Image 1 (cartoon, rainbow, N blue to C red):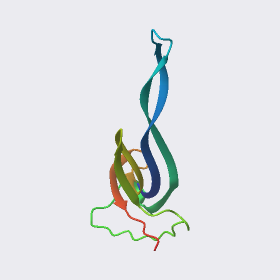
Image 2 (image 1 turned 135 degrees about the vertical axis):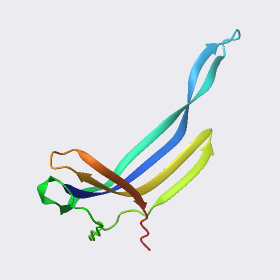
Image 3 (image 1 turned 180 degrees about the horizontal axis):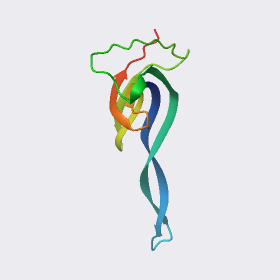
Length: 124
């Protein structure tokens, strides 16, 4: 059995754009347009690191309580945690978020336990 840690950072956006679309030509020959709105989604992975922090021989984890300290040097220049919502035609957002994920896998690769915890970056 093995315990791994994964550190992820993602940027996600949603906003709306409009486009003037031909509707019809009226009886006086004037072209009429309608405004159509459509959502624009963006995704960008800021970081994605996965590494083992503990391994147990024998195919099982012995009973007991465990503390598994680890350290990790974050990449320089990564953006701060950020979340902004607004309305422009409809709901919009822009966010940068980070998560730590831990999982316990059997020696056969089956996921036995999973845990996810958000964390914040604040580069002052």
